Amino acid sequence: MKFEKTIGSKVNFGLDWTLWLGNRSIVSSEWTLLTSSSNDPLSIVSGTSAHDGKKTFFWAEGGKRNTTYTLVNRIVTDDNLEDSRKITIQIVDR
Image (cartoon, rainbow, N blue to C red; front, side):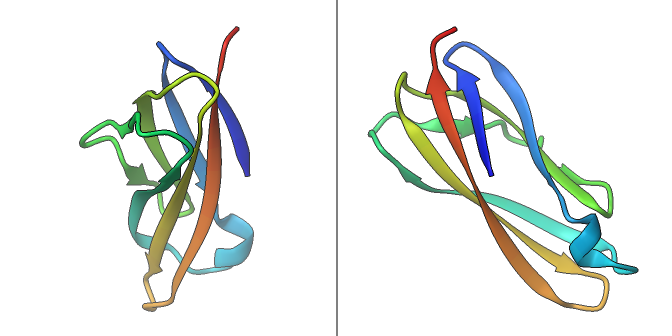
């Protein structure tokens, strides 16, 4: 999935795992910054990563203009299945 964000914004991003989960629920979710096309960090705001059992989300701020960040969301379900999905965030001007 691809998202856009401006430099000065603090934005909520997330994934909907409902179809993949079926009757399962998410018991843990972790977001990790994998790569950046620059050395300027995108911050995952501390304490804002969460889930509601079917969807995962986090708040992000910062970043460098014209930079793309790749993040991975790793989840564990109530029956101990594990999976991960990647998203990209492009920092843009508006």
